Picture (cartoon, helix red, strand yellow):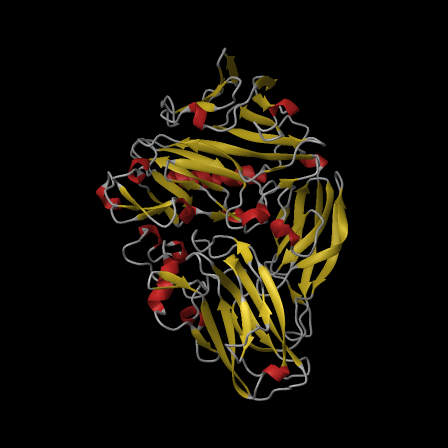
Length: 621
């Protein structure tokens, strides 16, 4: 560690922040990080990456703080009507902060759209660093997702074979022969927001780590289980703020009718660490996790100079206890153990997962359902929740107003999940994921060795094609009480390839009813974990019925099948089934997914439940 204060050196075309540990060079006034010097290495960044390929260029530069303890720089690109059609109508303020004694630097951005400016969509925004390929070849995203990675050269023509989409290639002639026969695809390293805290790269021959740390999800969209990219071959590391990945256009902010909008993204921390030659370089990952916890505990940071970033004393706190009441499970209230509880802008039940313009604040309830959400930005919110093990979404109907210094006690909140009658049978686990269903082994020709014998086996490439291998002539048939969903329910209902064309599929769920009340209504609950340009049609006991009992219509743009996601946006359908459609004895539900112009169209189910009428006594499941 260095006792040197933070020095700022301003030149005509660049500026340098230096605290004696790290030296960061930025273009002036562009605000592009062109050099990071650390531990005797002149530049950790890939110098062959052209500056014109490095993102938003600022046109104005200003020193915000420079006092020896902290340097904060602002690089701005302001918009006016003369720029219409050339740039997105946003004022963009990119900030870079270096603190005394800190082994790294921070960055955040303030985006502003003024009232009356043109409409625009913000499909994606992020901070990206491309590192030296000769130094950084070991990547770590999680304890069980880290490995030596192929080189970017291995993705060039002559060294790889293009696969079904540009992000995925089969390495056929890599520079390091050990990677031959593997698939490289950046989506295999995606992570949910709640798990996307730290990731990065290690240089092993002179142990050194480059880490991207995101201490808060408040500025990310889509809630805690929205998936985003992390690090991937490049070597590249990303701090994703907004993206449509695993969601589609629903997660693209659409600023319309001249509405004003302003948001602070970040700060995120770029952390650098090193070890002595001969030490285990994987210690750097363990150290990065410790630093990540330090950053999380320091949130919200006290040092950002922008008034748009609210400090801890300006924020409020909220707490309470969430209970579940489902009389068909228990006459008593059940603790909402492990519930996801969050504050997001006011909206409809479940609207938080598609909200993408403002801030969200999430936590997990403890085993007794108690929760606390601290350091919430001031504003109006709805309180939302969903509980693993139960279908549906909770919303507290009264708008919650958070003010500076407030401590709001919500008391006991009761969630009554959708339920009309007793469970006659069920398939899966209501956890908004298809991971519990049957995920096949990949085609041996398309392997990522990291995910062999890995709990995330769904991240292998090409699994959609295995459906036709397992069901070459007839579709899946599931018999309640006999079949096992972990073995007999394929993780995704996708088209089946037959004679070089794709055809829609119809799955069957067969079940017995000893007694049928033909004058009553039964209820079919279908929770969908992901949908990609798909449709669910449900028929009862007649697969050839001209009109299905239910159709979802065309839904979803998650693309989770292609991108190894196991879930995207959550859909819940409650379908009334008249007893007149059922018979005593053997019954069959037909689930048809007819859309088949692409192999990636399809559904991932979360959970399916068939309920009897309220007067019905439940049979053993």
